[in-house]
Length: 278
Length: 332
Image (cartoon, rainbow over all chains, first blue to last red; front, side, top):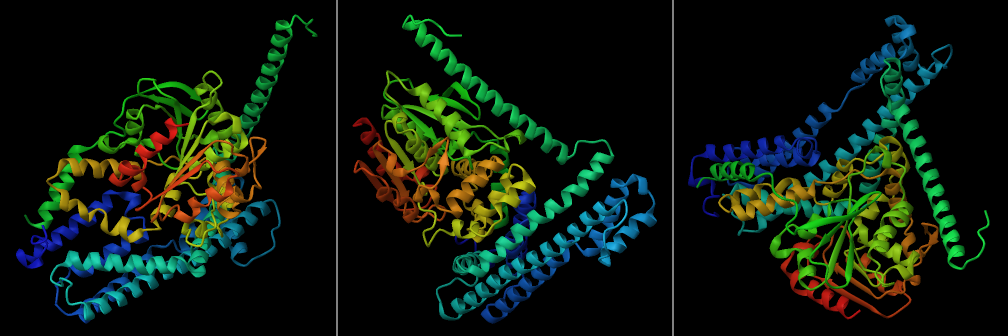
């Protein structure tokens, strides 16, 4: 196997084919692969190793750095933009406020939002919800960008560590891309484990998680308004139903327990031939 | 064989081998509780042992490999093994709390297994170990012994990365936003502890086992288990994360569940505690904190080299932990 791993045992196209297969495999995993910044990052590094190889550590690590920077750029490009949010908000406003079924009103609401106008008139609650969503979206974008910067910094440091290793460790099989890749993964994991212990990383991860929750909470009422307006089940109504079911379940449990205790008391009295007190 | 062909062969063969089975040992469902089915393994001889698994993953990791099955090993050692197999929560479970798990499911299972006034042995795994300890503290008379495998007790040890990351999270908002917390959210958190290994390297290794159906099958079984994660009931998850991970209240005896204060010093049953030296999910120190928290000396602790999953599937665990545990249980 180790011999088969050598890039020079076959055509260069084999390495690229392997990389393509691996990438397709990640794509097949759907959320577990493509949706993860980790998978995208390792794919970027893999891609850099899969390019035409020169036995030159500096050239390789330069290419890795370029690839990582490209990854950071690509990730940022895929983040939803404010324009996307604006269009989404206008669409939600159209659906949720059918009485205001007029693009002028909907866009006017959004202009008020952009200008941070006071919430006035019959749609003021909707205005407040739009503003809350806009703020939550901005907070999430900032937190996500900061978190991706953390990952990017770890990746940069792992490349520094790989360069250091390549310069000083002559036993690494530089002609074997997979060995190089495994080495990078090990170094990156070490860098990551060091970094994950920092307050800075914990704060960045918490910020992205918390801002995502806030974004969900801000979006949900608007989505519920749409679903309610369309006469469809909404999260709001499901929550109410589930809460009612929960109250019934607890009441049923308490009633059953009370009946069991009453039954036990009656059985006990019967067993002792005591008169049953009804 | 060229690498690309080897990986292609592995992927093609892996597809042919799917679906892979979840467990290997035959069982029958003997009763149900509100949130679980009680499975019975073996022929019914020997003292009953109730296994309480974590809510986070499925219990078949204990029976994933016929040669290294925790359940089969315990059955072969003469124990009457029962597993409380948690069901996949639906959206109506979002208000269920740990009080319900203790006061309903575990209480009903231990009642079912109490024979002639003799309660069952209880074995808890990871989060299930926290539930087992909490139950034993709340209802000391309802368990014969308590065994914990890779179970956190002190959630604030310096090397507990999961607790460190969870400490700043606004879990109430997360639960409010999601209801039941999706499995994918927790999986993302767990895999983020070893991202380069789990995303970067794990799947490349398939090329090395392209011609080994047995190894491919074992890989696929573990792969199935890793991501076969139930959603988490919102209220119970919030309670667990806030009270234990954020506030460390299992150790400080400041939490009340099922109407009882959970004080580990109230546990009267003998305790067997096994944990892994290099566990990145439950650090050894977090698990080892159990001994000093008990008020009695009938306590046995074993530290095993290796990581979290090694406790269930490593040859070392099957050589050192389970024979010792079976003997210890039979003595009690």
